[in-house]
Length: 233
Ligand SMILES: C[S@@+](CC[C@H](N)C(=O)[O-])C[C@H]1O[C@@H](n2cnc3c(N)ncnc32)[C@H](O)[C@@H]1O
Image (spheres, rainbow, N blue to C red):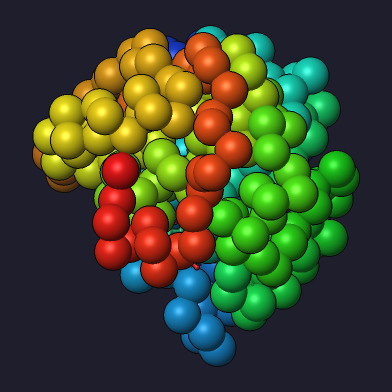
């Protein structure tokens, strides 16, 4: 996706991009390329691919969602997706990132410093451990490409406030995963609100699943990671 196509695709989704935001995206892509030479952050570093598969892909599921007064938790953000593009576009957004790989946390802090993104907390912790002290604390929890939905639901839904939202950003198998995770999401207190398929320019599909937390998550969840993995809900 070329730069003009990115701006136009965002405009079609009613996402405006100011000169300052454009500068921030350019610097973010440069940092991604520079740091990726020293550490494994992402397989996608070519500019036009970064624009489409990281930046645009991060923004699309949240188009039209009012985010400025929201506290978002991004589980397994890796190099910052989807939360940092969302922060660039919504400067008032408050973010907590949970990422178990410390070298990625160091990178995320550097991006926030360079781009002057405030109110972003980058924590070197696993979601299931963090949830012990911070249950039902977030208006919105996001996760892109982190785990199969049956496991992911148990990692993410305990963190969502009652009436809050969980957005699982999945690949082409998203609808299948959604069906397989129906029991899990119900037990954990969520109802599917929206399932949307998006096609990128190379034809690859993305499936974004939006859940609403309608009941509190029972206190026994999340279990330890080994149990979640061995016996997913
Ligand atoms: C494939 S990467 C995806 C990164 C980013 N979300 C993206 O879409 O580019 C998966 C990330 O999830 C993190 N992760 C795995 N298990 C996790 C857990 N239990 N809690 C939080 N993060 C986790 C990994 O460290 C890794 O950075």
